[in-house]
Amino acid sequence: MKTILTDLPGVLIIEPRVFPDTRGFFFESYHAERYAQAGISAAFVQDNHSCSVRDTIRGLHYQLRRPQGKLIRVIRGNVFDVAVDIRRGSPSFAKWIGVELSAENRRQLFIPAGFAHGFCVTSDSAELEYKCTDFYVTDDQHVVAWNDPLIGIAWPVRAPILSEGDRMGRPLKADRADLPVFDTESV
Image 1 (cartoon, rainbow, N blue to C red):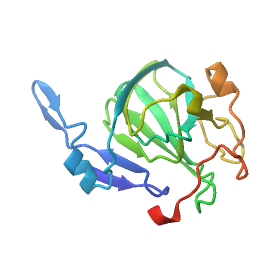
Image 2 (tube, rainbow, N blue to C red; image 1 turned 90 degrees about the horizontal axis):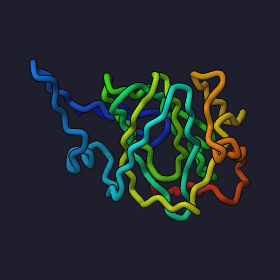
Image 3 (cartoon, rainbow, N blue to C red; image 1 turned 90 degrees about the vertical axis):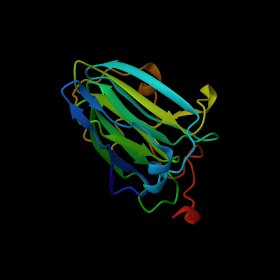
Image 4 (cartoon, rainbow, N blue to C red; image 1 turned 180 degrees about the horizontal axis):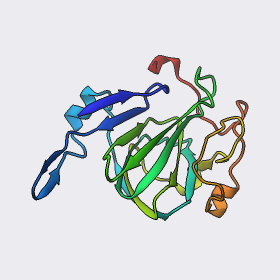
């Protein structure tokens, strides 16, 4: 597998080694030892499966009390997947990266705890599977506005389909009390 560093510390793109043949293909979508060697030593405790239609934006989501790192992959369709550094005091606060994840390119994106996550579906529909380092807690779900001008994400959609919760996302401000704090020890 190939690991690609991004401009956000700890956010990694993984390109698995794929073995195609006349029957189809095979690849390891997760191997704890290899991922640890690549810098992803987190223990995953929950797997999620999401299906959305074209132009859906989900995000920008995070948990505060029970932060989740995520290892994301697309198993059908295409998405523009985004990670945003929302850690108060981080040198890369409000910076984002966007990556095309698709069933065809088989790339994965690892987003460590302390970052917000969102994606936009760019195919007719898409299915994502992602591993989480902590459990989902309904009352710990926080949302940053998907269209916050401070962040300035170049979403590939003009009229997104949003949930009511995502429409209510709040702007990212360094003094928001519900943001994680940058840990200088983890750098």
